[in-house]
Image (cartoon, rainbow, N blue to C red; front, side):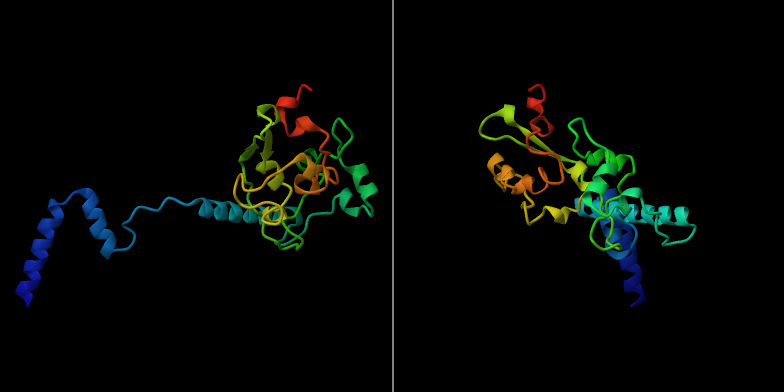
Length: 207
């Protein structure tokens, strides 16, 4: 029995030495932990990691601001507003007199939560654009920025109630938007009006 074990060990050593580095890696990873190369993270893994980083940054900010873990930030002036009119008066405006939400976010006037609950986990920014080209041609091409919108809203605000999670799966028309559907759920109510064409249609910026 001992001779068989010794012979098997010698034979295995000879075969292992004669194998390529790639084959050796496969053999080692079959029998030992920690020898395989780390897997390339998928998009979902990267998103979850970014979310964890954002949560940690938020917790760290809370510690710094309040001196102890879990301390809440001091309320902003806009948080004390009792009516929309009072809040709107404190928010920055764009050149047309509409609330400039992106500027309000950058200047720290507002700090949107990712959900109704104060303990809702922070979500990572989704930084890619969706370009929509209608049948009318490239002059009416619209560009939707996920980064701008996910800085203000949770993904669940639009998916899947308004849009499917697949580019091109939904038909979007100006009739829908002007009727308070699709983009019109927000634009024309709390966000800039759909009549500001150049905000979404770059080719119309000079019109």
